[in-house]
Amino acid sequence: MHFRYVARDDQGKTQRGTLEADNARHARQQLRERRWQPLSLKRATASSAKTGCIKSRDFVLMMRQLATLTGANLPLAQSLQALAQQSEKPQQRQLIDTLRQRVLEGSSLAEAVALFPKTFSPLYQAMISAGEASGRLDRVLEQLADYSEQNEKLKSKLLQAMIYPLLLTVVAMAVVGILLVAVVPEVVAQFSHMQQNLPASTRILMQLSDAAQQFGPALLIVIVTLVLLYQTALRRPTLQLRWHQRMLQLPLMGRITLNLNLARYARTLSILTHSAVPLLEGMAISAAVLSNVFIRERLQLAAERVREGVTLTQALDASQLLTPMMRHMIASGESSGELDAMLKRTADIQDQAFVSQMTLAVSLFEPLLIVVMAVVVLFIILAILQPILQLNSLTG
Image (cartoon, rainbow, N blue to C red; front, side):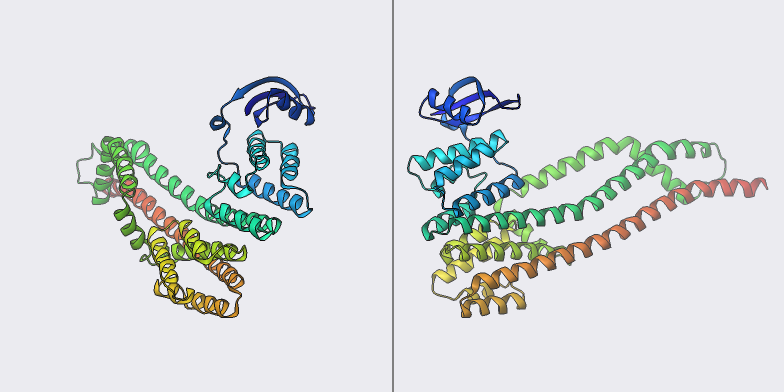
């Protein structure tokens, strides 16, 4: 049974959450074991007790703590109970309580985590299942934490690389918009009474300013509509496949996309093979985590070739996605029996290539945007100054 509770902890703070117990009395006992005073306890359905995603940082810490407890030869249910008791976040504690209850009912940990696909992806489920089957659950949990941490670091690097260019772009567009809508009309209005012809740059600036004032809101609506239509169109599998294929053909962005996806594929397959997950299952899961549909389909086709009896190196080579370095390293790992180690090295190399190419793209974009912004501002200044200089020359 699931129970929703409201309790006061030993520090006087109110805690809310859901736990599983045989009855209400057992639920109150669990709360008292945490040194909490039950204030309210209501029965809830099992579906309403299920939690969503927890933060990546909390997930990594939870996996490391569970690995430590299971590595100390504590029973799994007892390890989960200890983990729940020391968890300070209700959502995380709720998830752990549910896992513990499933384990007490006779389910394996892999079967229990399958109830929470938002938190435990098929990759994590396969790793935990392999860890339980091999008796190396603690090591697998550590690897799972390392994998999640590595992915989080990569996302953080990508976000950090994108924040400044995006901010710079928004500021540049805002500055130009303010100049055209608010500043330029006030200045160029002084030239409207002039009898002589205005310079071409000034006339162009006045037309741009008028257009920005008249059609600015409509243009913004059109842009938003096009973005929404673009997102809707990409939901169609055929269009999404074509677009992702075209992305790989772009000069610099294509290499960045390819390196990012290959790094993730190699790292995922490395950790799955190290966890004793069968190769075909590992290839299927590794391809499923990729963001680029074209690369994903190519690597899924490689898994089918392996199923037909082709070696991993030959199957991946036929996809025409691997770099020469990746091809030789995977072939070496496959022939020497150290495939997981070579895949990990390959992933590290691709990660480094991704970071360096991303840094290069940002370093090229920033000065280019600054130059464009400088040209636009210079054009506005010249368009304003030219009539003034022309008027001075006539009066002089």
